[in-house]
Image (spheres, rainbow, N blue to C red):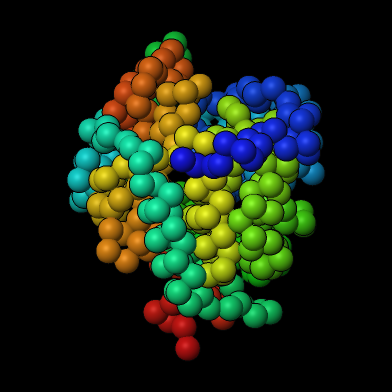
Length: 358
């Protein structure tokens, strides 16, 4: 069981009593999982033209562009009109050599693996213990958190009155963030020379910095309560949003060993969490997954771990039931989004990679 029946469901906590209805998204289901920094980079490119478009001009610029679910997507829907969001052009094996040109590849598909709630708490306990025993380097002032990953997604592209499911080539992303979160840099296939991720917005739960993470509670119950409270009203429901938020903190940042362990313990308390015996990340690595199916979207989000070391490999979202996307074109078996962490380190300078670090 995920929680003791004698304890109140997290969504029943007093602080969560005022949950708002499900947020309607302006983008098709699945695109909200597209990487935050890439959307931010697109917004940077389009802001100069915002005044010429009344819809764009009405979008508050002070909103934090790192928040992808409830705040960022309405911005993206306006500023990215006509733009092709990144997707995937790799086979089910995850072979990057089979990547295709932007927006021309078929949707990435997979065999939907069976899920089982039995043993998931024990699995998360082992993952939590492994995380706690894995040393995490500490970032100092003037250093940067470097994250390198493979990212891919499948989406619906509409040209004129015709919509189709397409994919892009597998994207290698490299990002740098200062510990306080105010300075950053991104290099990906659309920004080969890089683009600034600088922001004046103070970090918060859905757009954290390294320093912000260091101040989070490491008691699993306290941490989960904070997550439910601060994400109230976002996503298809409180449990889905809590699971998504923890996944974001695991893949988009560099949490300490203690915080990582607490996040896994907290995840075991979210209703609906299951395990999947085999899942493949964007780099083609097989592992065991901790997952959660969301009935409102028909999608299952999977956190993928090495079967031996229990180290975190990446995340993917699979359409399991029903359909999603414009005109319901995304069918079961479609990998909507996938991301694999290939490097994570502390470096001394912006645009410096670990291999070049002193």
